[in-house]
Amino acid sequence: MISVGRRPRAGFFVAAFVAAFVAVFFAVGAILPGDGRALAYDPATTHAGLTERAALASKLNRVLTARLGKPLGLFETIVLDSRQMQTSEARYLGARLSSLDPEQGYRPGDDGGATALGWVVAGSVVAGTPAERGRNTFFDPSRKTGLHDGGGAAEVAHSLRLLMDAGGSPRGLATGTGFSFSGPPATEWLVSRDNDVGLPAFYDQLEKAVSGAEPAARSTALARALLALGGTLAVLEDAGEPAHVRNDFQQAFLQMHQGSPFDRSSAFERYVAEAYGRAGVPAPTELIDRPNVFAFISAADAQGLADRTQRRFFSPGSLPADAVVERDTTTRDVVAQARDGLPYEKPGIPRLELRDMGRVRYVETSDGAGEERKRRLLAYERVPGRVRFFLDRSVYQDSARVLLPEIGGYAAGLIDHLFRGELALTIADSALSIKVTGARGALRAAKIYLFAENSQGRRWQFAAQDVGNPGEISVGTSLPADARRVAAVLRGEDDAGPFVALVDRSVR
Figure 1: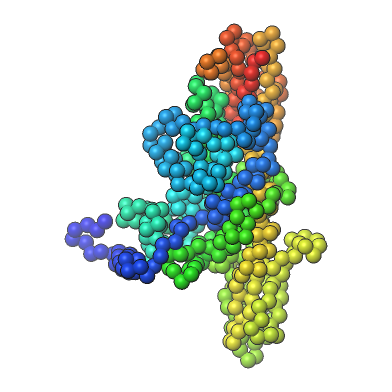
Figure 2: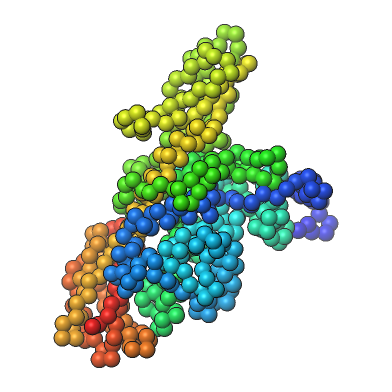
């Protein structure tokens, strides 16, 4: 907004010119709108496939069957009843869920029902809607920062594209709250209360899935907890996409395709989506165990997914600049130029072969012993006057082959980490005892709540007790006489962070 009597800033004229220029071309049909995506991996295919594979490889099925009394586990139908939610929350979430493709199996039915697995997968997809949320999933582990990749006219143009794709709003564009080329670190977004499919929502809704008074409230809370689990996995999965850990939005995600300025997205993202789809995403090769949630992304031991991705893979905006080749330039000079132009220390440029003009060659690396562990890291070509560096489909092929199973291993490991706590409940002569296992170190600020459920499905709290170190807990009360089911939830912290454990079982 410009106040009366003030001269408009220069930035306003730039924004107005860009908006008018794009609008005119769009009006005459010179520009075709793209898909409006702002995430790394395609939500409907790659994110969905990664999340599905991770859930199947994890212990989530056993959690649902053994701890929550869902006999079909991941394939149990869970109903989300919007009447159990606040009106604004129900409307916002409902609009995002209704935009999902029903043929993919992760859009709930008209009755609000979907399988438990479907809810988790849906959460990884809606985590990227609206499209502006894509700016919150970047994390540079070497600098501990989120996205900060310039802006200016390109930022205005991208916000306008999202507006025309129905991914933004006129108000967002006018007030500057549309997509910007900066955002919080993904680690902050993961625990932000503004993220309705992040960790706070996961913990809160998981507790309500046990403590809710009515069956509809508990079912709705479980659906929302599973959605938040999927959204949490989506943030982690983006740490396995090179551009997201190398502060590279503009060059990676604003690449023009098919000659249309409005058809822009990551070439790597498109390759992975086309080559693997959803069903072709490979299963995890190894489930990863880390000391806490954030260590799955980045940690001092440099074994977080973002750490490993940043030092082993290039992205379009972090390639070496073209090296100038003159008559007396040696191969060593070109290698030195390439190394000097790298914004990150790793991966490096060990050697180049420049004898053949116009021949595409590759810098190769190895992810372990054996010929099958070799991969093409970077493409380069000598042309008149320079050597250009680039990424092509061969590099994408090798990158995806290595990255996708690794991402799945971290995602499955994170699921198991979040459900590490277990409660074993024993009833003897109406007296209750509970054994707590899975905690890493001593529990702190932990409390356990017990609930009874009658034959009509109504549930109420009948006991609560502070909890110390893991072990056997004798609850100083007996089970209510009319109880048909008993449930318990424990919340606190251990050495690995927030700790949630629960159990829901029949009395008989």
